[in-house]
Length: 169
Image 1 (cartoon, helix red, strand yellow):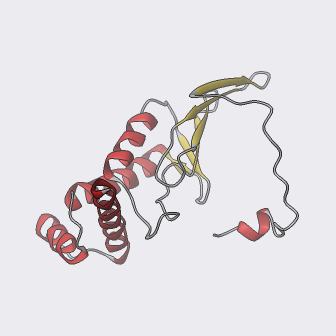
Image 2: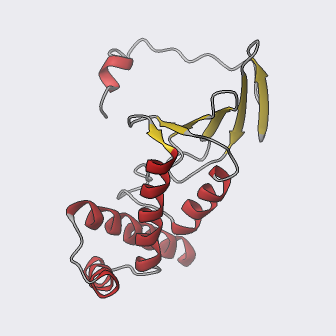
């Protein structure tokens, strides 16, 4: 991951301490004129993902809640979970969004990207075959997918494969 070595170049001596403050769903912290609203939001990348909203600045820190799952096999998105997270994010009056691994984005840029991602998820629907999903993309958009679009199609296909395998057990 970019920046990984800069943030913590040596993990061999890392000792995690138990937290002294916990919360279940939502917590507000007053930092003296600035409020941080923390909400557990989950996501396929990390079930414990939380967002932090600073209403005075209209900034929403996203953490990893929009990142794909890469801990359980191939990188993947779950369409329903992504839709749930988007509904949660729409509740905030944010002008700027900061994700853990990307540059800050304006509201317009983030929602443009999320809408494109959601559109790919809608096209892929429940398909578990990349070729068929790409063909469906071409039929709906009248264009071949770009490399980035094909990668995102693959993520949704992988998510469908994972979901179907869970349903078998």
